[in-house]
Amino acid sequence: MGTREAALENLDKAMMSRHRPRPWRSAKESEMIRRLAFWWFTARSERPSARAWARELGISHTWMQKLIREFTANSTKAWELQNDRGDPTFEDLDYARERTKEMRKRGEIRPFRRFRPG
Image 1 (cartoon, rainbow, N blue to C red):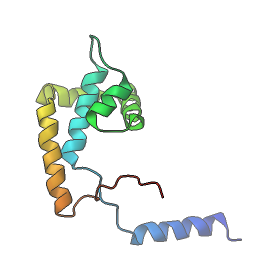
Image 2: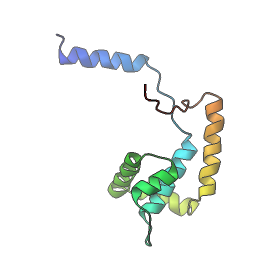
Image 3: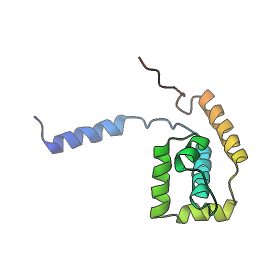
């Protein structure tokens, strides 16, 4: 059995030669999802549950929870985006999703695959 140092060295070598995986969605779509999640997070009136909002955004509720933790820890960047660009809209999200589709057709983004039980 090898040492911990040898294992870490081999891991470093593997990571150096490996290509980064392609993203699941465009950067613009990810930004719009973050902005809409922050918009939900800072809402003062009645709002749907985090799970329902995540479903509306087309993301997993676990990613929504991660975003909420991120906003709770440090929301400075999100506030700056909010101040610079104003309230996000679902039309902006639709536009960003069209961009993602175009990038997927060109092979710049991972292909969309649904889980199929075997």
